[in-house]
Length: 410
Image (cartoon, rainbow, N blue to C red):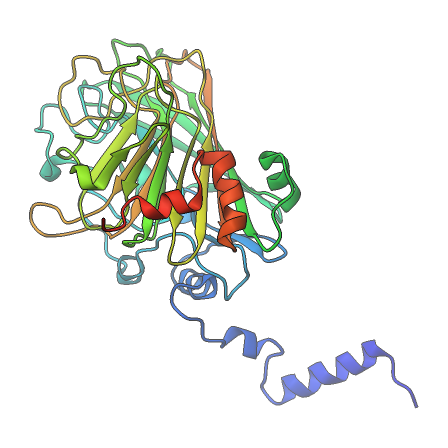
């Protein structure tokens, strides 16, 4: 007698169940190497309730508990490289740290400014130093509400109250949508088909803030900005690339956030800036709206990974919040694009190591009920360096070979 496939499957399931074996037991018990997406997926499932967006081998992992941040992603399934930096020890400890809980994540939502007379990271009247620096809990430890989840999209929302250094109170509503992009959408963004042998995962975040208070946000009160930061894995073979606008626009790059960046770690070429991302020296750089282009990238030569971050820049905007840790002459002369390399602090402690690719919206001078949005796309490409170089030239104006040679010993 010939049995149908449905009956055969039912019998097989019953036998497995009667023997105490789950049909997907092997999959659940598979051991993944640290550094793979499967390892981070299993880890975060143990301590959080992550949301996974998938499309074939590409996947994005999001943590509602950490403000809807993208924790990591992969272009090659469970055994593929995990692109985001994750602080496994801190998450596993369950402890809450002073100042900041650096849980990791390859794109998180913050709000600016960090420093200055309108800072939301320093209480009124305190010194601008690490001891008094405090990340608002709504951007650090508080969970965002899950509005909706689809196979390639998740939406989050949070009502927030913040008080700045000047004593002004912000009531606002934050909405964040994360979308996993299809490979066809990536090809459209590149204006070409993906080169043969290139793997990709790409996601877009649409972030919005709404003034929910009865008072307008003005230059006299201070304003907020949408600030997106991506934490990635550093190494001596990772180089950050920032294309910039050429011309008579004053300083090319701000390089003194935490002391001037040594010349051997920051190289200004004719059309791009190279910044070392080894996680060994706490340093930060930034581009003003006069210099910034809507893209920043990095290349990991050891793993042959090209990361591109594209953002939205309003060409009519000139005012961006200033995050320098001091009372500022011009609190709205801030940066659009930033990059941070982690390293030991004065006391020898260190949050990471990791490096960050960052972008900010313009200053949100909003009337009651008004909103401001900021969209960003993150792409991770892996594969043959010749093929990756095609993408690098198109997006960053430099070849992979040029990037690799910058910080090689002379």
